[in-house]
Length: 200
Image: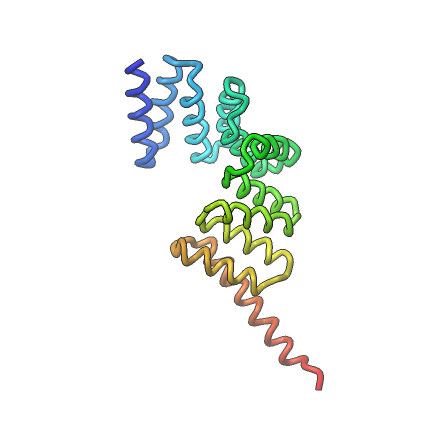
């Protein structure tokens, strides 16, 4: 139906411009005209996630799954949202489902890395981030996540290297810049302590 396509196009344009409320209005109008269109529910979910309205994003992602159970991208996104909500059992269910459906989907390895980072399994987090990288990802977020895993393992040199790599990809990321400054300060304090307490 042409009207639905037009509404989706208008909504997508609003989304790209950052006008998420107008995007939602038009996606919802399209959804009323095509209530079984998984693409519309997917776009609603992405828009709600962008607005940090996780419950509404999850509700729309689940409507996609109800209509298309094998959609690995949506299972991955649901798993990631559950990780953010600290609902780790639900997160793992959807992350594993996405992995089974498409083990070469690089985003799922990034999301599993985030899950492992949050649940404290830093070695497996690093393995997952490296897998995403090996599949072709050049995202600064992967290096940030890996850096945090190394930080929590106490491997500050490797953490610093990862954060520097993340900043070389995305120099304007203030979160990474702050994390790097903290690591460099920690390394400096540790070096000073070692120098002052050197056994003669």
